[in-house]
Image (cartoon, rainbow, N blue to C red; front, side, top):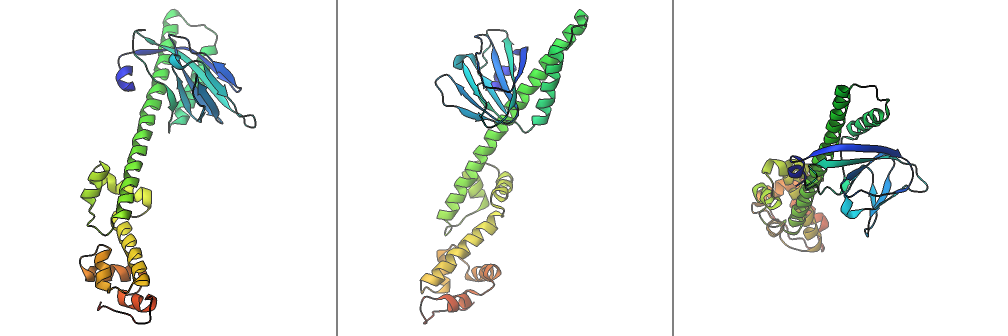
Length: 275
């Protein structure tokens, strides 16, 4: 949404003001503002809204003005307020709320450059002055691009993590059924390769390792709590092939199913199965 708007307009820098104390910021009707945290964190609340913790950036829209910026009493913070407007003035620009980035160093460098050029003595020719204004506009556009792009990446990542967690819950509840990578990746709404990478990043295990560990833990409980045959337990935890179950069980526990059952059965009369 925001990129579709931004491609149609030109943001122009009006002012950049550094601060380290609490204040109320009023966003003029035809302007917009960015609050960018350089150190510490802030509490920012808009009109009739609950405060949010801001550690990186916050976009102020005139429809929600005024904004109350609070520096925690026991903490120190440094931040800047960038005031800008968009051209043409009839353009739609709805950017509002918390902004996130993984490129804070880049943004802080551009902030320092903007502060320096906004306060240097004007000794430029008209052409040099125009070049400086153009450079400031490019830096503002770059700051907006970084925040928009990386905030979207963050939301997509959160969405992906939620999808992975949903399939993990499904696995935990349906471990006894046939579970395949294609089926689970479709359930998560992503490619098999992307799902594989995110699953291991989230759990620290490959998909099959996670499923096997889960199934064997369930099998161990059944051995300890029931007198079912090992073959019956294998089927109950999702293994159609008993010999495959036996190999996986021994690899994970260090003991064959029959030996584990002998040592952990709930009664002294053990019903065993040939491995």
